[in-house]
Length: 91
Image 1 (cartoon, one colour):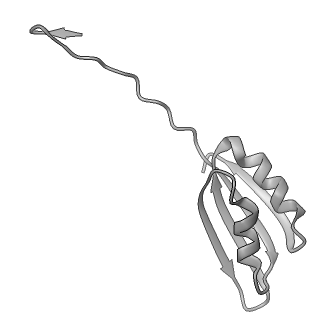
Image 2 (image 1 turned 120 degrees about the vertical axis):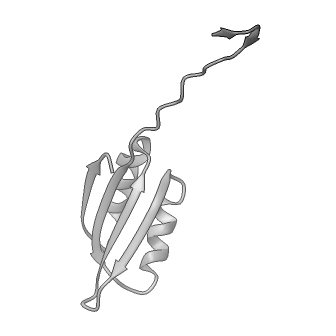
């Protein structure tokens, strides 16, 4: 677009892909949060929430980049403490 001799460039904004939400239910113990953090360290994790209960269980919620969702889910499933992992696209 040209306006009064000044050239103005309009660049399209990159679309930000939606994140995937992974929820893992697991057994809580000493060092569990550290193991989860070390497991997902090399991947595009935007947010990690760890909630433990008095009954010895924990819930981990991870918001990850879509390109890393399948890999992070597979790594969480291999952890001994994990009972189940669910994935919700578009968090």
